[in-house]
Image (cartoon, rainbow, N blue to C red):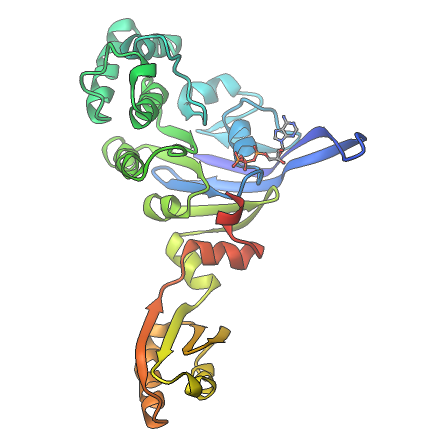
Length: 321
Ligand SMILES: Nc1ncnc2c1ncn2[C@@H]1O[C@H](COP(=O)(O)OP(=O)(O)OP(=O)(O)O)[C@@H](O)[C@H]1O
């Protein structure tokens, strides 16, 4: 559905002394997305997510590289690409004063479908996206979650099989976000849609996506399933809290035998990253027992995508977001 090779975009910018500099927003990325996949494009602010999305949706011309989207070249066949995709931008595209239903119908007609078809399709989408009863409501009188779902209905009215969503849940409360995730998953299960979405929320990528591409400074630094990424990059975090803090040095020695990384001692707490900790824990407890070291508690935490990001880029995604 999406195939990009060496796709790049440079902007002319100004340096600190107002001299001309080139900003490499996207430094040559390769992207492949199969039909029916939900792929998350993850990265901190300024990493190049929106610029990549705008090139793939033909809104911005690449300065280098090539891309085909839904089988068409983004530069030489941009009209065909546009007809084949839905794009929901960060800011949305509904005007606050128009009535929601009219907007949807107008938008569908813009894509060349008849008024009757656009109305039928719009009504169906309103029902699927929990917008029942809001057909004549003005977007300015809707909640943030309802407006965002209306944006998505607009992007879907011409029945595209490939949908691009730019930060679909930014600014929504946790309940509205979880609700929108269900609707996005439904797009695939009910309509067989392929979905490419940008986000800086790790939980969102984890909950929704089959595969995650991580972009940093305009370059893709990882591409895999959320689980594989978590497995590859960091072990599980094993945290021991000792009954007697004076034994922490000895406990650290025992833990170090199975630890891969990040061995840390803080008061009565001794922790480390242990790959496949599930298999190591029983032996670890036996060793501690044999040494007469009593535990207050033992916790094993699976790595999060934030740990993955930290390992890949040396900084936390949350710090940037
Ligand atoms: N029109 C432009 N002119 C100059 N620089 C630009 C332009 N658009 C983007 N950039 C720069 O390119 C880089 C990538 O921006 P982009 O908006 O693609 O990042 P992003 O990952 O989508 O960030 P965010 O999460 O904040 O939306 C940034 O350094 C940005 O300042």
